[in-house]
Image (cartoon, rainbow, N blue to C red; front, side, top):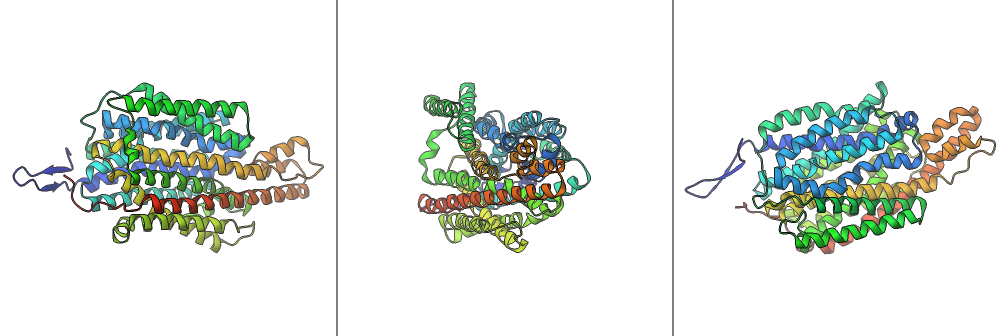
Length: 514
C-alpha cells in the first residue's frame, strides 16, 4: 500500500483507500500491546512481591519507572518519527518491546526488574505517538478520524480488560513472568502485518533531530518526576530539592532552545491554541487522578478481599467495558452537543466515582465497586477520546507526531505522578499501622514495606499473631486507599471545571481535509 489518500487529477476530489481500516487494525495492535502490559503488572504485583521481595519504594519504582521513561522520551520519539518515518519507528519499537518483555519476564531481582521496566519504557515510547500520528495521516475525513480515534481508545480499554483476565488466568497456572510473555505473539503479528499494510508518513519539512534537546527533555522530565516522588514519599531532602532544581532548569533550557531552532523537537507554538492546551491539561490531570487508584485496586481485590488473580481481573472489567462503549460514540456526542460538555461531563463522572471509592471498607460488596468502576470507564471513554481528537485536529498533519507525543507525554506523566503521589499517600498511611508487640523486629519491618510483604512476613509467626498483623495491615491499606481516592476525586472535579472553561467554543471538524 502506498497511500491512503489521493486526489483525483481531474476533479480534485478525495479518493479514499479501502485499506485504511485494515491499516487501523494494525495500529490498534500496538495500543493493545502497551495497554495489556500496563494492566497485567498490577495483577502480578502480589506474586512478584513474594518472589523478588522488593521494598515498598522498589515496588513503586517497578510500577512507575516505565511511565517515567516513556514520559521523558515521548516528545523525542514523536519528533523522531516525524523525521525518519512513523511506520519505521513503530516497527522498530514493536520489535524492541517484544524483546525487552522477555527480560522483564525473567528478572531475578528488584533492581533487574526496575532496569527491565525502564528499557520497556524506551521501547514503549516509540509506539504510542506513532499510532496516533499515523491515524492523523491515514484518516482525512474528520468524522472518520473521530471514529478511528474512538476505536483506538476503545482498543486501549479492551487491552485493559484483556490484560487482567488473561493475566489472571496465567497467574493461576504459571509464574508471574508469564504475564509479560503474552506480548510476544501480539508483537509478531504487528511487525509482520504492519510491514505490509501500513503506509509510511513523515514530515516533508523535517530538519535534523536535535540530540541536545532529546537529552534536555529526558533529564528535565525525569528530574521533576523524581523530585515529586521523593518529596511525597520521604518528605523534604537535599536529593529531592537537587533533582527539582536540575529538572526545572533543564526543562527551562529545553523550552528556550526550541524557540531558537529552525526545526524544533517540539513546536512550543502549539500551546498557543487554547483547545490544544486545555485538552493536554485534561489528559494529564485525569490520568493523575486515576492511575494511583488503578495501581492499588488490584492489590485491594486480591490481598484484602482474598480474590484469586483471575477473579480480580474479571472484577475490573466494568471500567474497560464502559470506556469501550463511550469511546466509540464520543465524537458523535461532541458534535451533537459540545466538546466541553462531553469532556467536562466525563471528568466529573470519574471524580464522583472516585468519591464513592472513599466509602469502601474491607468487606464492601462487589456491586458498589463494580458500579463505580463502570462509571469511571464511561467517563474516561468520553474524555480521552474527545481530547485526543481535539489535540490531533488542532495541528497541521505534518506535526501529527509532535502533537501525538505531547498528548501521550501528558498521559504517561500523569500516570507517573499519580502512582508516585497517590501511591505515596497509600504507602504513607499504610506504614503507620501497629504490628503486634511481640513480633520480631525483622518481621515487623518486612510487614511495613508493603501489604504483600505483610502477607509474606506473616508466615514466619504463629497463626493467631499472623492473623492480627495481617488484619491491621489490611485496615491501614484500605485507609490509605480511601484517602488517595479522595485526593483523586478532588483533582478530577477541579479538572472538569477547568476543562469547561478552557474548551469553551472548541469544536471538532466536520469537512474533508485537503
